[in-house]
Image (cartoon, rainbow, N blue to C red; front, side):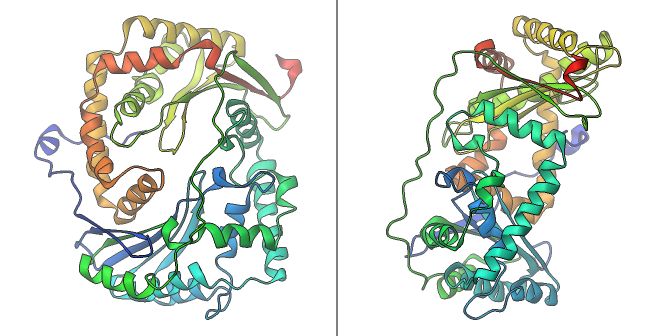
Length: 441
């Protein structure tokens, strides 16, 4: 959901949305992005590697996430866990995350601790010192994480199965954490092959946001990251392409732990492309128009209020990806309403929308909400760092990030309707029913 509307006068008088960004490239190929924000004496320091689970070799699913865990172990100069301990001792916090397209590490600290953060992060970029005990122990940790987050959650299993059906050839169809049987086989050789190849300055983006000066950041980056050699054999970022979908795909996931039956439908959708983000922006609006609000969206009005067919409806678009993104619809039927009836009602609502398109009042309401959201995003220095890091990791530019609010504001109702007509091809759909038991169908 988008944040509540700002008063119209506040929006009209809103400051320019462009960020104060300076970029550099070190001699070893490392990109450096500095986002100045001097409201507080704090800084966010992030290193993004342009390698995620979709870049993993066949048979080694989960190795990107596995290495993320292992990066908190010892280096040639730091003991296991020392980096996080030093961050905490300096009043900050740190963490990391893995996605399909990138892996990122960050620290939030006082601005005068930035040099220390760079020193430690550069150390583990080049000097990780793993033991077989580290591999054994942390492999069990990620297996337990999968058991807790996926195997113990029927909705997570359902999402995993539906995504695997949507991406038949591309590695977006594999879970980021990995398939359990492949996770159990990950070893030191797998980890070092990944680390030695991708954890290199010419595959990394340094984002520093907060109370900093660009020249000072550059000097620190050159001192700490500059001496690390680039990887001469860094492979081109080529992934298997998804073949054209020629028939609708359907699946039923039955699990007695499912408390409420529901249906979901997914489509491959265009991602945000460098220099051309219009199609993605139209899909942002389409998701809001169809399912962004329980009260004013198309599915909310028609299924929840008009016919009382559903107790929940939603739509979502994820186009912040290097390759094709996803667009999804979800309907939770009301008591006594079958999934078949709910799906038919959803289809009818979409068919009607494809004839009429969005209402102008609805477009303007979403346009205002999106502008408000962009303004609120300025409140978080970490949010700004994440926005630029994620975008650059999927091939977008700083200019693309800064153009995005204007691209969103320029979307027309016709562009939203055109996007919907291109998207909603029955032969391109993957529809999943999630139920406690097949006997209830």
